[in-house]
Each structure stands twice: as structure tokens, then as C-alpha cells.
Image (cartoon, rainbow, N blue to C red; front, side, top):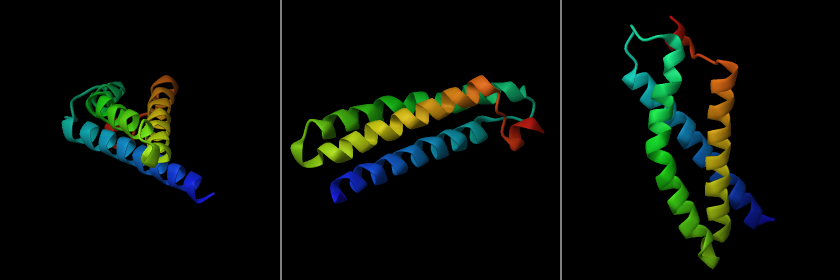
Length: 100
């Protein structure tokens, strides 16, 4: 049971890091004159830089018996972050700071 909770904890941390850093990058790159629908481009730019690194670290950890569950958590958190970004794109979500 404790082993699985490690995977869940790591997944949550990776998800929070990806979403948080993506929003930080989007906010930092945002100029007030951009179209509100373009914020996903800036969000994706941050995620595009971070996702391959996270996937590589997750793959390395999965192939190590000692850190296998942490690697599963890393890859799960990454998948959840990418799914959340895709859902935000398809439903047309715009954060309040981009809508004004």
C-alpha cells in the first residue's frame, strides 16, 4: 500500500509542477494585446519544453527496480497534465488574466 501511495504522490507533484509551470510560462509570455484564445499557445510552449524531459526521467526511473513506482507516478502525472491541457484547449478555457 505504501508503495502505491508513493506513485500517487509523485503523480500529483508532477501534475502540479506541469500545470503550475505551464501557467507561469503563459502568464510571463502574455502581453495584454494578445487574443485571449492564444494563451494556450503560450501554455503549450512551456509544456513542450518540459514534457520530453519529464518523460525521459520517468522512463529512466521505470527501468530501475528501486524507483519503478516513482517512475510510474512521473509518467502518470505527465499524462494527466497533457490530458488537462487538451481538455482546456477543446473546451475553450481562458484564464481570467487572459480574458481581460
